[in-house]
Image (tube, rainbow, N blue to C red; front, top):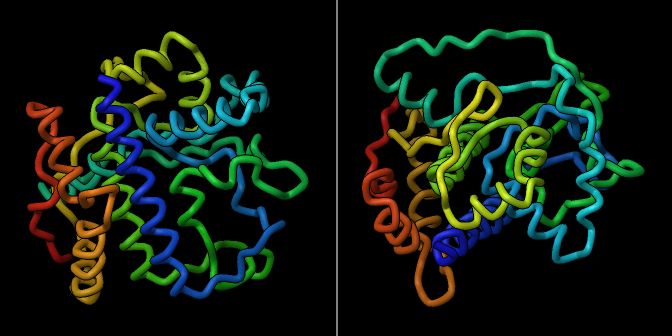
Length: 260
């Protein structure tokens, strides 16, 4: 199943590249050395962490994973629902039950002298988190509602691509995949059993789009589907992934948006 993980990585890289270019049209005050948002509260998929570990291995920097040792016992943010599961419940008029508990927050272990040590392969939660106002002034990130809608769309796609994967805090998933056995299992596309801290990824059930954002989302989807990946495009690659997981994955290119 090596071809399958390569396909997932191709799709993830295409999403990252597309989003990085798309986001340039939005104003941001973020710059190198700005790290208020670089915390232990980043939620990711196994695919994103696999991508990070592959990068560390290729750079001879696997020792950076040791920065996460001893953190598992901390009470940091752990999700009770995935992005696509929340979308599914909203589409079916089911109120998601998720408690807001206080959790431990500290600087991201990949942060060194206010710079990210894995910036090139940082997860989407980091790529999409920027602000129009300095966080020191506003005490929180200020982001355009339309961009927030686009961000959720991409989070849904990343989870969709990582079929048979897991969703959780970056600390938990990096520690999970730091086991050579589990790393190899994921590389071979073997399914993992979920736990209290790691949730199973789910396919896209549909999109929740405010009416005023509909045209922008249509434009983004069309551009994303037509994004070139080697000698084909993103939409074709998604269909290849669907064929590899016929029983598990729906066709993400055929969803009708539900306007809120």
